[in-house]
Length: 204
Ligand SMILES: C[S@@+](CC[C@H](N)C(=O)[O-])C[C@H]1O[C@@H](n2cnc3c(N)ncnc32)[C@H](O)[C@@H]1O
Image (cartoon, rainbow, N blue to C red):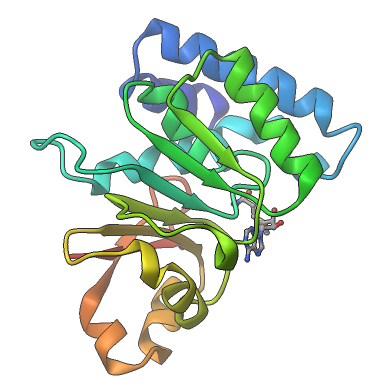
């Protein structure tokens, strides 16, 4: 995915025309809000589809397609909207919960969910440690916490059926190899489609 056009075309494989309109709108809202608060790096604005939208959408490659969701998709530390808001925009029929502790970021996410008409997307402005646990179908997190800490904090939301999808950038393989044995046995690394050298840590 070397160009913005290729990244858009890839994302379009995962959503219909309305979903693409929602994502175009979200990108405009994000670039505008990035003048008010630091949401994404300025240079990445010009590559927003490659660096952020497609990078988020590709997580759908790693969740079961043949079965219906068995609970909400939980995204930890959603920040500017990645990956959770992109998933909600592509799959508005799914329950998606975005946990973000910083108030201004959470307000931005709420405004986006409302502007994009994502009635099943819920923003929780709280530290994850203080959120009432529920059984999540999928847990995603990009740039949230090291793997051990992430597992500890997310444990109350996880069951044997929960699928973890964790974009970990170029440190993915190393991070997994350094993890304790029970965690190492739970996960494997998938290649990222947006960055050849990056990986996504996925549970079986
Ligand atoms: C580095 S940013 C990554 C944002 C986004 N996931 C992305 O990849 O662009 C991490 C985000 O997690 C949030 N965060 C960190 N610790 C948290 C916690 N314990 N509970 C909820 N949110 C948290 C921060 O406020 C921040 O917005």
